[in-house]
Image (tube, rainbow, N blue to C red; front, side):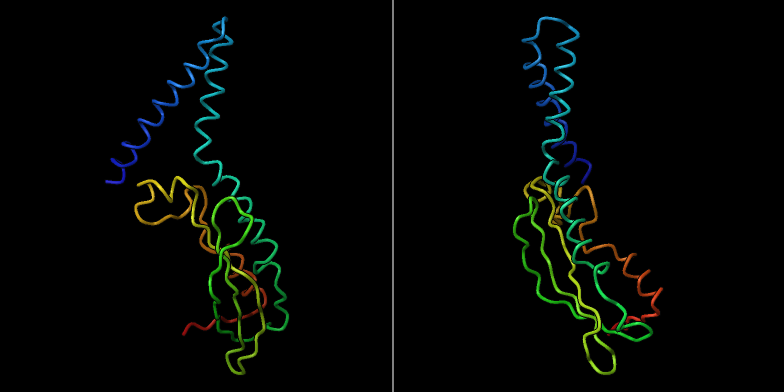
Amino acid sequence: MSGLILLAVVIPLVWGLVWLATSIASKAQKPLTRAAIRWSVLLVLLTLPFIDEIIGKYQFEALCRANGIESADVSRARGKRVKVEYGERKFVDGTVMPIKESDVRFKDADSGEVLIQHKNYYALGGWLMRYTPLSMGSPQPMLFGGSTCDRRVEQAIFKTNSITLLYK
């Protein structure tokens, strides 16, 4: 079913973009110039629907590097057992693609003291995924994971520092 939806959206889109690029390039006199213009215009037009996801991917990664687990001081939790607590998700201002952030606190399993604190981010995908049937009800980004910062980094940091994460 998803393949049919993809074909129903992508084939008319590509056909229309090829027609538009050919129409724009037809004004050129030389065949080589006409071909170069057609392919250049087509390339630009094909990337336009994804431009917000491309920019959003870099914004998402920058937010994760600046405020994610990589930026947190984990020295107080070294060798301890911790429980995780997630805060409310709020939209981040100034991003091309809607991105939500939430506070993440790792508390000592015994005392409840906050040992590690950082932010997690959740991207909602570009306009193509939010407003077309391509998302199939899940508006996640098409070009990257977008659901929290890299879990593998967190797991590696925890393993290196002998931090045990307790699940409820």
